[in-house]
Length: 76
Length: 328
Image (cartoon, rainbow over all chains, first blue to last red; front, top):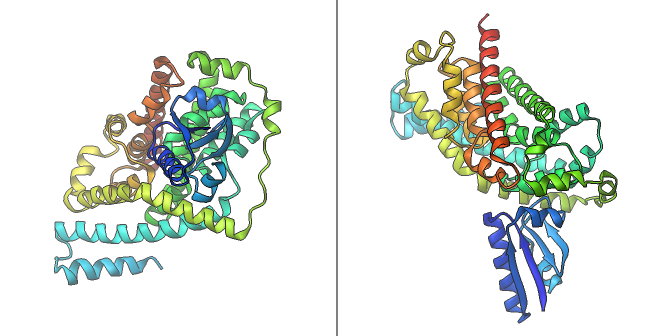
């Protein structure tokens, strides 16, 4: 199962990012373990400076915006 | 070119709504219509075109540029980058940590973070079109100066000692050489630039539209209902306490630069001294409680208190000096 983390300080966009990923994963029937991470220290350790950011299996794949559908599908 | 918005407001307020020119309500409604239409028109144009140009500049590039720079160039460039790089205040924590863990001194990071809310391209262009180039220039220079001086001061007192332990550790173990290797952004095509600009436009507009209405609404109320004589007698440059009072009044109020500029326009045309006006507006934009609570994640209360005091002090001194210069 894919481990997906959404990094962000709890802003509206971060919540939306998590919702978008969950919705697309459900649509394709791909099981994912989605976690929202709000700790500043964790963001620093991933080297992320603009939120929301997405980490898939410990690799930062996206940061700074709500990802579009094509991008999300490529992670699943 | 911008006079069509005055004509539009003339027509709507006086012909369509049948209000009397010169009446309180008429003046306020006219101000509201003229400024909202003009501001939204300018915002759409400016955000789009500036985003086209700015598409290839991102926060990672800024960090890589600032890492390992000479301190004094660092304060200056940190402040300049703060002015030209827009970012949502919810990103200030990751940006702070990204800079700090890249080995950039706290003072340079804070020069960036202090200037960022004060100056941005939207604010500058709005100021130019609403209050003229002299005040715009004063605003930009003061904003940069506060960022630079604030940054220097924080390094002078070794503010990094007052960071949260994990942030201090990241700063001390930073290795700027490894950071420099990460910067590689591919060249953008015209289509990618357009997409970026369109996205920025929608994103910024969705965040600032309510501030425009609130700001213009307040500006309009001031414009229509507060008499010029009252401001001159009670808040003129003769009263030394009016500047610190304006600064204190600005703290609990929170707005972004886009919302405060219409208020500024109204206060200045009402005869409020320029120093007092800027002190109030900058305090509203830069010293806000939500922002400070966020920064608590990476700083101790002591450092937060120092930064708040620093801002209040510099806004007050700036207000007094500008009042002294413009009235001598």
